Length: 239
Image 1 (cartoon, rainbow, N blue to C red):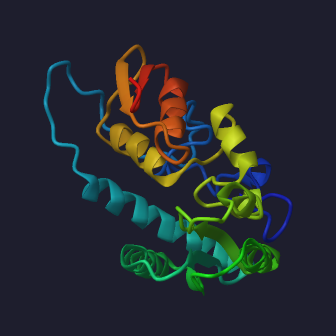
Image 2 (cartoon, rainbow, N blue to C red; image 1 turned 135 degrees about the vertical axis):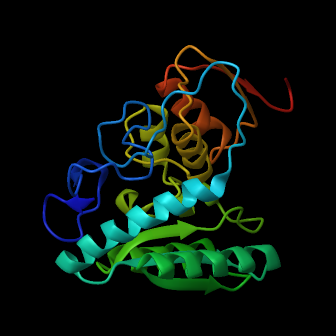
């Protein structure tokens, strides 16, 4: 996507397709694809046909087309930065951040890793995020969750500019997702829809069960499925 109001304008209201091509990620609102930014769908699969939903072919298709998008944007606006923000020294998060950095670099982004100490305060985190938000070379910001005990995740996530909020943690973006009006959604929920699209599954009228009601998977996935006219049952620990 390129911003229609000039360089470094990445907001949901200012995005439009680069060309009339089928980009390999979910469409805006993820319920009513508008011919831009969706997976290349196969023909609807016959009823009763069983298939393995392999993720790698989907990821490879998405990567190829994102590389093209990034090159278009870089030609117009210069390098595009992707920043990850992490607190503390959790080994699993460290590995994940490293993988994201490698992936971002392979797609043509300029990765930036921000690591704050375990004893970082809310003010420290908000200030670090604000600096990234004010930097026009940073196109996206991803905050690693969960945060250490004592930090208000909602307050800190609210400091991420909505137009740079990669994982839809800002309450503004959460509201847009739940209203079916967001051009993106948290990554795992988005991946589920991309996988089903790629293999040609029509969700209209289907009964779907989602297990878990987190703000980054269960709840947004329920909304994305509902946007596709599925009937969704959401199950969690009290079900």
